[in-house]
Image 1 (spheres, rainbow, N blue to C red):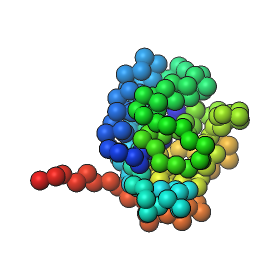
Image 2 (image 1 turned 60 degrees about the vertical axis):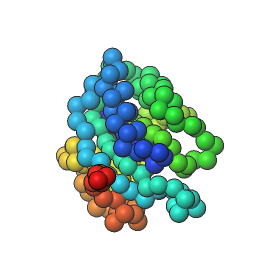
Image 3 (image 1 turned 60 degrees about the horizontal axis):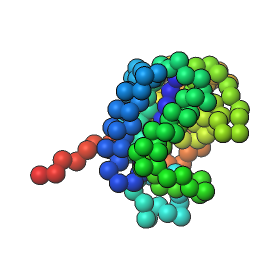
Image 4 (image 1 turned 180 degrees about the vertical axis):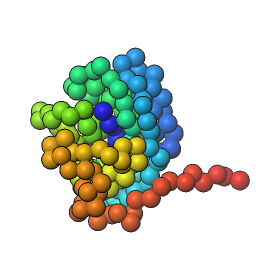
Length: 170
């Protein structure tokens, strides 16, 4: 199972770290691998781009015995605990966003949960860290390698996704 974490409000690095800590302390979730942290321009927030921080993004591989909807509920509780405020605006700034990208080879289409994540192929800020921890991973629907999907994605912000290097204050 693979998750994507993102933050673009406040202390973004702290929110990612806190999310990993809460996921790691959950009795039914075990973190197997973590990607590096990537920084990306706010996707889908073109109208807000000058007014909002860039995102920090990271992907995690996890193991869980939770069913997909139960996992979603647990992730939403973590988001709420970390100050996430749900907005009617689809793409809005957030302290933390945790998405389920893949749940084994399952495909799920429910009103509040679609797996694989429906926009994974459009988001280089997800594909780059995902491929860092799972370079041979394939899309369970098409069977196409995510490496190929990355090469053919229509995401125009490819050059706007980069490894994040924390700047130390002197």
